[in-house]
Image (cartoon, rainbow, N blue to C red; front, side, top):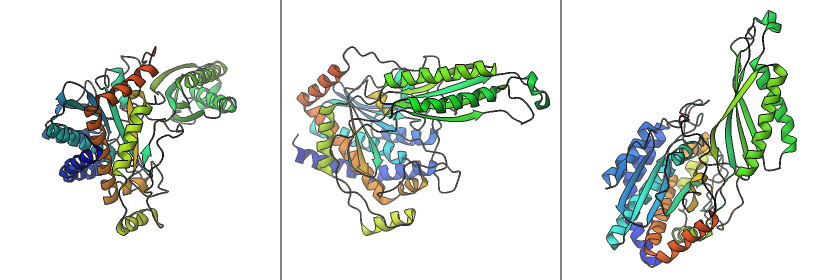
Length: 441
């Protein structure tokens, strides 16, 4: 299908879904549900896809807010990833949850793209299957990790994903590899006045943190170690018998994270020895770096350029300026299709090792907007963000149609993926029986 015809057909298909898409995005924005508790948000998307003729498995496996929706049959199977979890303290009022990462747009844009792709394929008499995965808990870097552990994402010949941002383009390098680690210290309680009779679990946790601070000088420049103490006791005059810390270790790849994690474990063991406490640890979730696919990302980049970015009006600038408290402008430029590896991490990168991934970004909020912030959440409900979401849906649909119509392109995408994953065996990084981490540790 020629680019001009594909653009016209996709434009029409997305326009037909625009009202439903904007309604759902605004509804999910208002719900602002936490990770693994997105019951209403996931239901809205699943119901929409059901109404549009998709066969929906909801919930998916044992995860109550995950689902899979499929249209068509046979090959090729083109996947699309949706997210819909919110963030704490990003709502309108302090302490409220809000979509400070724009996931109300992310999940809905992919769903509208899936429906629009199905409509264009059907009208053109083209074969293929569209698979939408509703993925919870991206903000805790867990949803796709546990879904992949339990068999998700292996039914796709190629996969597409996007994210709202302050600029537009294709990212083929992804983010950092990461381990989310929980350390528990066990001591012996005692009255504070007779503390010599106790063994403080909190001392173990704090001494581990001191050791981790010294470790930071001796790790590669790109490594980051973040930590909080989640439980440290209940009263100052009672020696704590239990303490719990939560660490992130980020690095450029799995080997680097594995190496630093073992050194962090040594910090924990040393702290336990020094305080005469016991320590145990487990990995809550683990993230891979992105596996690039140059062929697919080149195709996605062409469709990003084909559809472009939404044009901001004076009213869009005024509304964004009211949110930011300063003059606002939007980036219309399209970035080149290759970027440096990011410092952040996302569980979507795990999927790239199970199917070729093409991931893009569309400018959905004003330049200078901070991510994971209520300023972004406020803009995620504005008309400009909705138009950006619909542009993303067009890129999804156009790329999916192209992959179904162009067997040579898809074959090249698959050949690159198979070459890069030769001798690779996917490790889910979390044990089969480990429960989904519905609540923070």
